[in-house]
Length: 167
Image (cartoon, rainbow, N blue to C red; front, side, top):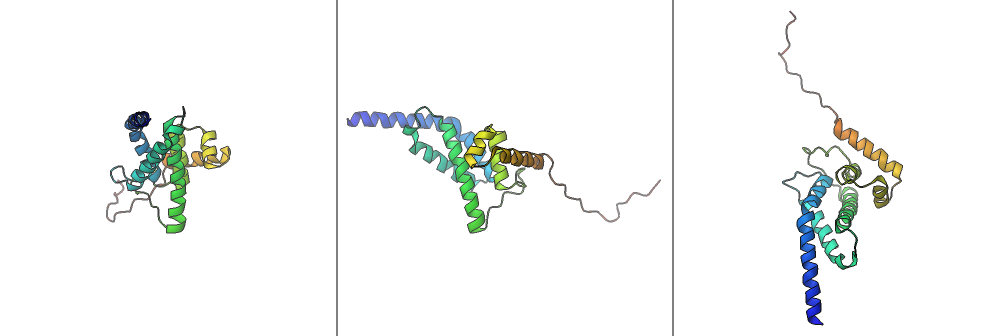
């Protein structure tokens, strides 16, 4: 009996290690996009990834044919959404790194844009995951895409003495 349990545990550990080897990089990138942190300085993204992988490992035996990547991504997204709300409302913080392209977006816009465009999750699935109507997800995704593709221009400061004389 004990040998069978040890064998199952070893197999489970090997399967999970293989999953992490294949999926951790993409999940890390997804988490970094969600938090809008710099790729080389992303403690919030690493924490999200760690929590998602730990949760996936805890549920590993119950997945029974479900895609572990989808499970980890779903946990990552819901944990980000809850954590962002808590940090913004309760703690009064959550500032994305200003140099990232997604910094101009709200947390919800980043979440929907990353799920839809980077992860390829359908509108219906995104809406169900976030508890929003499909039309709302569509509108938020369109607005976020427009913001990223056409960022607000900042006017360049005028330099005194650089006017060109008319010829």
